[in-house]
Amino acid sequence: MARFRGYLKSGDRPQVTRLGHKTRGLRVDADGWNSGVTVYASVDEHDRDVFDIYRTGGSNGGASHRVARIVGTGPGAVTLLPDAWGNEHPPHPVDCLGDDLNDV
Image 1: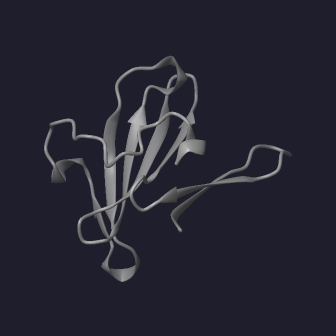
Image 2 (image 1 turned 90 degrees about the horizontal axis):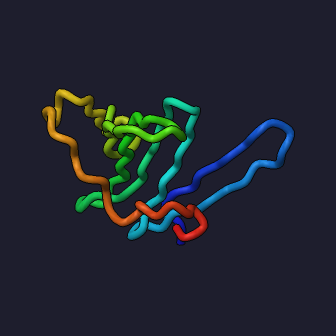
């Protein structure tokens, strides 16, 4: 059963959906030429949803830096900003790093 669901809607084209499982997560990218975002959805060791949000260099490439992490849902959710983890570049979460969302 899917734990995560991602949507894509572009112009007049129909909306499409991709699902992510608890053990594989879900990766979503939106890129411009020189900037973009990547969101990784995963599950932590306490069975809470985790969303890591990265700023990217867009389709032209460049460095990727995590800008926020959201842990949990509802009133107990926690949002962490960069100062919460220091200057180091954190590792990518779980195993959702594949480039093809159809594989998740």
